[in-house]
Figure 1 (cartoon, rainbow, N blue to C red):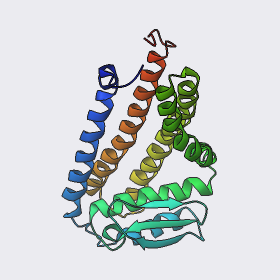
Figure 2 (cartoon, rainbow, N blue to C red):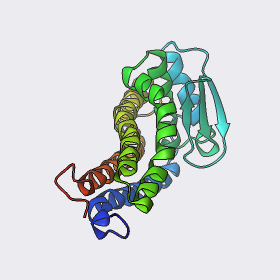
Figure 3 (tube, rainbow, N blue to C red):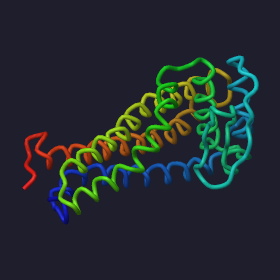
Amino acid sequence: MFFFDPIYFVFVAPGFLLAALATILTKSTFAKYSNVASSKRITGAQAAREMLQRHGIRGVNIEPTHGQLTDHYDPTTQTLRLSKGVYNSYSLSAIGIACHEAGHAIQHAHKYTALSLRSALVPATNLSTGLAFPAIMLGMFLTIEMFVLIGVVLFSMGVAFALVTLPVEWDASHRAKTAMVEAGLLSSSEKAGASAVLNAAFLTYLAAALTNILILVYFLFRLGILGGSDD
């Protein structure tokens, strides 16, 4: 029913193309502004700490972590982890990313609804996405449509997670863009460079959500739910 189906690539090609472009844009923009130092000469770690302090948030640990673009906030331990290229860097890229991750810590402290929902979805999403494609593949191999349908339902959890992630990431970037200037971390002209990094990074989340939606639509189409057929 689904093996070697060229229609699959017709459906998902736009998402894959956008994802590839987003990845290239993010890496190139990050690299460009990694070579532009802020006039204040503050590091990413210092910028994140300043942003948290201005919002009256205490108890968040800020620590370096390995890898590139591995920066994240862990709400379970209230730890903001910054890659070493961000933690110790004076660059506009570093400050933008550090403030974005601090934005997540602020969301957590203020019980931002979308972040709470995303956190609640994590266990179910991890389980469902791990089982989705095995169920689909088993259904295709045994030609049992019900297994494919179960796999698609499980995969839809990942789609929901990707959609909930969009407002979480957008809001964190908005908080960062505002704070960078209000806190005096960057000048108005420097903000443009840091914002470009955040905008490019958001595009990767948008591409991921679009790709997941297109994959889901493809399976619904092939199951006949959206007007296709299972021939």
